[in-house]
Image (cartoon, rainbow, N blue to C red):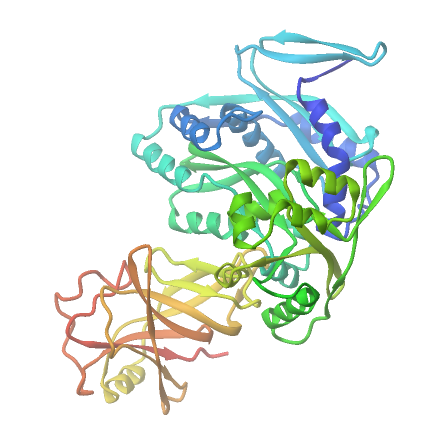
Length: 569
C-alpha cells in the first residue's frame, strides 16, 4: 500500500513524458552517472534517514495576500509553496542527485488536517484519508531517474516550522522586496550563449544551487541591493515548458539573522529562444542568428553554426516530426505580450500562424487554443548542440539580451556590459587605494587634485576567478547630481609619462543621473578634480553633498575627471 498526497501521483505521471522531451531538447546532452541506481538509492536513503529541518519565520499573512492578489488562485496555495519550497530548496542544496532526477515534496503543519490518497497496489484502488500530523512533516518522493519505477524513494521527514516574532522593520522591508520581484523570470538568446561558453555546462545548470540568484539579472540585482538579507531560492526541477523553454516553479525567500521575513512565488524559465529583428526574412533567420552569436562571442575561437532542423515529439503512440512548432505561451511570456498584441505588432493572426504548422495535432491545438508558429533550428557551439526556436523581436528587446550587470551598493557605481567574456554571475567589487607621492605629484602637474582612488574588479563565484578583460567596451556608470560638460575620463600610463582623456555620456536610470565611461579592462581608477584653467583646485568644500564613495558624486561649479591608472599585470 502506498500513501501519497492526492495530487502527487497524477502530477508525476502527467509530466514524465514532457519532462523527457524538455530535458533532451533544452539540455542537449544528458550526463551519464557512473553510479548505479541501487548505489544512488542507498546513498540518498542514508542521508534522508538522518535529515531534520528547522526553519524560523515570521507571520506570512501579508505575503500570502500579496501573492494571491498578483497570481490569483492556483493549484497550490501560497502557504503550501512556502513550506514545500523551503524543504525542497534545503534538500536540493544538501542532497545532490544529478541530472534527470528530482523531488516531490508535500509538507504539513503539526495539528492541521490534510488528505492523503491511500492506494492499494493489489486491488489497484484507492481512497482519500484524513490525517492530523502530530509533528511538522513532509512527504518525499525522491526521483533518482525519471521514467524508472525502481528509482523512486517514498519516505517522510520531520522537523520544525517555527513561527517567531522577529523584527517588525525587517518584515516590512522584506515584504517590499518580495512585492518588487513577484513576477516570472526568463533567460534566453545571448544569456544562453554566455552561460555555455563561460561555464561550459548545459542550460539546466541555471537552476543548480545558488545559480538562480546570480545568473537571473533581476534576482541578482535584488541580492546586491540588499546585502543585509540572505536571499535564496527553492525550486522544482524542470517539470513543464515547451520545445524551447524549461520552466521551474519556485519561491524566493528573504531572511535575516536566521529568520525568514518574506517570500515570493515565481516561474523561472531558461530556454533556447533566439531573436532576429522584426522584418527579417524567414530564409535569413539562421544566418542572422549565427552572425549575432559570432559577434557576441567575438574572439573567433569557437565553432558556431546555425542550421534548419526538426524536433521529434513522441505522444506515446507515434513520433511527430516538427520543423515548426506552436510555442505561443512561451513567446508571449518572454515578450510580455498578449495574443492580440502579438498578432497586431507582428501583422499576423491565428489562422496565418496555423498555416505555418505542418503537424496535424499541433495545428488542431493551435486552432482551438491559439498559436505562434516558431521554426526549429540547430545551434552548435563547439561540442554543444541545442535545438532552438527563432522569433522576431524589437531592437530594444534584443539589445537587453546577454547583458551582465552589477552594482556596488557602497558607491552606487554600476557595471553594464554585453561582453561575452564576463559571466552572468560576475559581481562588481571596489576597494579603496592609496596613491604614491609620485602619482599625486603627476596629478598636480596636470592640474588634477586626487579625491579617491579605487581598485575595480569583477568576481565570478561559479568560476571562482576574477575577470579583468572584456572583449567589447563595457560601461561604468557613476551616480552624479548634475551634468558637467568638463567631466572627463583620463588614462595615465604606468610610467607616468602619458595621459589620455576619454569622453563621457549621461543617462538616467530610476530617476538617478549617471555619468558613463567605457573601458575594455578593469584597472585602478583615481577620482580627481581639475579646474577649468588647468590649475590645481583648492580642497573640496561643502558643495560635495555626499561622500563620493558612500553614495553619489556632487559636482557644482568645478570640473572633474576620472583618472585611470593601469594595473600591473
